[in-house]
Amino acid sequence: MSLLAPDTRQHPGVQFPAAFPKRPVMIGSEIYRRSRYGVKHPLSIQRVTPVMDLARVLGLLPDDLFIDSPMASPEELSRFHAPDYIAAVVAAERDGRVSDEVKEKYNIGRSGNPVFPEIFSRPATAAGASLLAGRTLASVERGVIHSLAGGTHHGRRDMAFGFCFFNDPVLGILAMLDGGLKRIAYVDLDAHHGDGVQDAFHHEDRVLTVSIHEYDRWPRTGPAGDRAGGMARNFPAPKGLNDTELRHLVEEGVVPVVEAFAPEAIVIQSGCDALADDPQSKLELSNNALWEAVSRLTTLASRVLVVGGGGYNPWAVARCWTGIWALINGHDPRDIAIDPAGESILRELFWNHSRGRNPPEHWFTTLADRPNEGAVRSEVIDLARLVRHPD
Image (tube, rainbow, N blue to C red; front, side, top):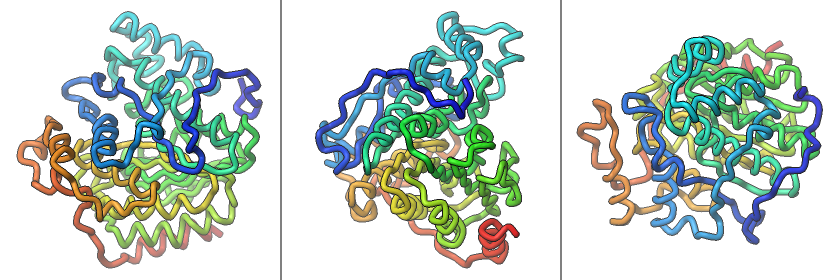
């Protein structure tokens, strides 16, 4: 099915809380509590359920604002993904293994995309959340949805890539287009370029894709001059990016571009591997910077979908994403105290990494990092100007 052809099939609905769209809604699932990519994989950590737990004990998540994610069916996934690839992922979960031919053709079972017990169920659940969010936001005039497990932005139509088996942001955006929206902005804050989303909408002028990522970081795509089919803007940031510099890129680069596009909806990929505490990048942000960026971006459209993304330090992820949920509900995360119940949740986390052997005390006792403000380097100023005014 062409991405340009609308999906006219009827889909079963999930009842949203009566408070929606007046109050933000979180979508999550218990599948992430028991699912692991593998002991030595960067995604062996707990990421989604600690946010659910922490938000609840801190009084930020009443039961009526939480939705248990549906699992996308193979038919729903085929809105973007190739049916033979979907079938290969289903078979990998059923059989617990793949052949060399499948490894070669679909990149399953190699290159960071392991065969594990929930190889279909887990990513299909994340995709189901973004599909539900996209359909719902397309049916209302305003609303905010936080889909914790989303943000798998590297997934390709017919292969696994970069720990991503299905591309839930693409599916969520397609659901909005199918629902009648005409202009959707996608802004990616992950340390890695949002290549899969950009490529999916290369020839689609209804979707603007924007990515702030680390220069020369895998997958080494998204240079400043890359505009794809014309509707992409890329900000490859230098190593050591600080809070002040991210603010500059957002205000002087991203915001003007998105405002000029005038989106009806915005999807914000809030991967937090750009944090200084994360081992997968050389950027030096505090979570305050990501909170500020998300807060600013949510003002640019009346319909907002915030998804997760990268993040490989369990304490950094739990605190950052809990803070995002707090701020979209009108709370300043810096003012939220971690009570004994919240501290207990954080102390129970485990990270099989050298940085996890002696965690600093503030990873257990505060949501906010110490800010990392600093000078805005000339290359950051030039980057914002170049991408905003490419001609």
